[in-house]
Image (cartoon, rainbow, N blue to C red):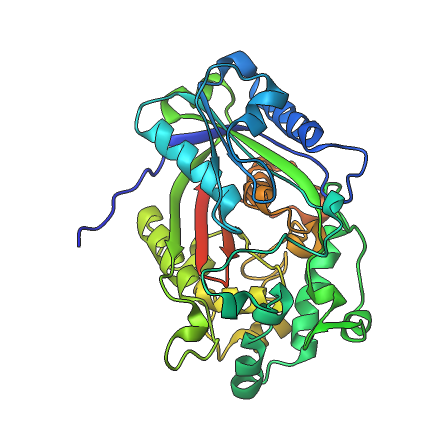
Length: 388
């Protein structure tokens, strides 16, 4: 099999926008799209007439590019709706980036949004899994809680270990003006919270949330026309497994192969040998505390044997070796699925520009990684962005 190529430094992001995530009862989906996109327009110093093509990510509603064309009055240009479980937001950016890298377009738009609170559901609408035996009675907290048994039995990972992840993310989220939850929580409160799916308690689970985020991508050769502090796409990858992990012989729920494959491919594209040393910050998919712990290992930030000690030593905090989810993560933002992947890149973009709240600003940030994990899970996306 031939080794794939890459689009390193061929595509730049020159403008981004993001709504406040939360219970946005006073905003429609169209309102949020407009708010996010017009913030991106202002950030880049351009307008709707400059956009040559667009991609929109949404999982709960809409079936075509008209979900973007209608509110933004984008007439006559190609607009594509994409969806790939929780990787949907990054899929919008990835497809937009490929279109620019190919030379087809110079200026494109990628938007992710989701309006979940109005549905009245506890989470996403029911997913049509290929196997009804899997879908029957399955819940996201229940399926994602399964790896804890492996880490508890083999590596002494306790409920307190998971609680420290939730405490970290809620702490940084308390400073983030665009987060859904902006309140720090104590370890005692996390441990004693109502159980959702053992051992995951209330604060180990991300909330149901509304939100939208947008990115304007351009050919790198024209990026300086818009701003000096743009960022470049260094690598992008999506991995989709062909067999539900629980159906695999001897699968022990110690990690998700899709994340390992996608991250290794992005490391190859970006020339990263040691992610802890080479990356300045990471936004990863902490839909549940155990997901963040497992992803530390799958991204190669530490081994399974080391993970408990790394968490105890604040290895993943702002002042640690590799800051993870300094935005507050999904714990603080929630997970409006179509928007999450774009929102993560928005965080890295602002961190590199030095434009986030001082309590959570990563010093001299120049290279960051965003990661999403979705489905059973069988889908993982990784995107690396940074300065030249």
